[in-house]
Image 1: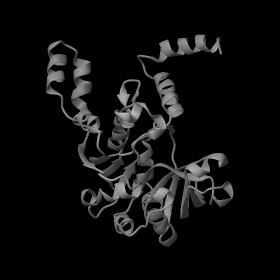
Image 2 (image 1 turned 90 degrees about the horizontal axis):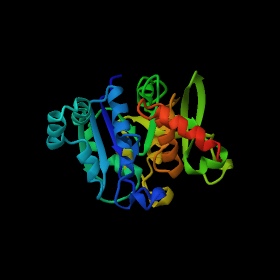
Image 3 (image 1 turned 135 degrees about the vertical axis):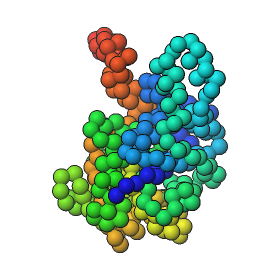
Image 4 (image 1 turned 135 degrees about the horizontal axis):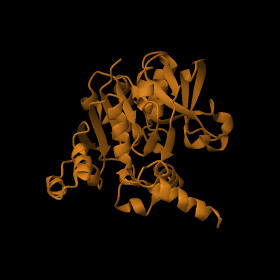
Length: 291
């Protein structure tokens, strides 16, 4: 099924990386030379998405500015003969039809997704979390989910196994392997307090494809963990009534709302970037001798 719309919730405060996020959106943290949010938008575009809604809040105007055109900068780059940089800057404004809306009250991820109702309309749509970068060398992570939409119920969630000691930070899923890396999901539990309460160690990681009926469910979903409207609680209703598909996607995920995740992304992507890989490799080898 062809899915052309995506929603990127990017309204969080970024409290795990304060004080940097006091006045700077975590979605704009650079990984070498591109901000986090651009990696996520490019993943969606490379999966065939043409229309993207980014949900922000107060103080995140930098995200809108980044995807806007910059005629003054483009003119300077073009006149100075810096064609490569001109092309890079110019193309950012043409990646997709990008729209923005603000989540004026911080009532949870489910509340943020509900803001996308009029944008989505009556069609399935992709969701890519604004602080989760997934680098895949084969196929974009969200594309891996899209190709399984409707296979075992309504909607698809991207999953990975997490350590038992960390499951309380995630949503735990009841899954049954069907073939290869594809599972049927029939139940969910948001942030189980103990490993014993977990349905499994498989958790939703930053990506999903949802049917439009999620909005009707979200409208009547009561606040859950943390007093917020949890997207997991709404998806659970679909999972237990109609079932959902879970796909253990291929790709390396970086949590850009986490200090170590930011450092990890910088180093590992830097080791592949053509302009930095050799210098960084030599630097790390020398640094390792002192550890």
